[in-house]
Image (cartoon, rainbow, N blue to C red; front, side, top):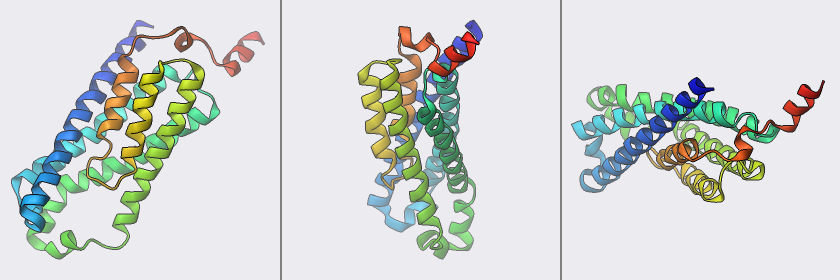
Length: 205
C-alpha cells in the first residue's frame, strides 16, 4: 500500500508539473502568434514551446496512471472505460506534441507551406483527440462524484478542465493535467479505499 501511495503522490506532482509546463507552452504560442504571426513557428521560442508541450503531455499520461492506481476500485464501468479512452486520446496528443517539437522546426526550413497550411487530415485529428479527452474526462468526473471518492470541488475543476480540453488550442490539456494533480494529492476519503460493488461481489464468492 505504501508503494502505491508513493506512486500516486508522485503521479500527482508529475501531473501538476505537466499542467504548469502546458500552460507556459499555451501562453508562449498564443503570445508569439499574436506578435509575430506565421513567422513565430520558426523561432526558438516556438521550439521551446513545442518541447514544453511534449513533456507536459507525457506527464499527463503519468497522472492518468496515478488516477487508475488510486481510483480504479471505486470507479464504475463507465468511469473505467472513460479513463481507458482518455489515456488513448492522450497518447495521440503526446504524438502530436512530439511532432511540434521534433518535426515542425525542420518543416519551417524546408517546407514552410506545410506549417502554414497543414494537410486537411491534421486539424480533424487534433480536434477529435481533444473532444475525446474532454468527453471522457467529464464522464470520469461524474463517476468520481457518484462514488464519493473525492470532494465536489475537485470534480468540478476536472469538469471545467475537460471543457477547455475540447477547445482547439495548443496545449489545451494544461488545466486537465492540473485537475488530475489535485485529485491525486487531495486527502483520501472513506470511499477511496472502499471496494466497488463488483469487487465486493467477487470477495463474497
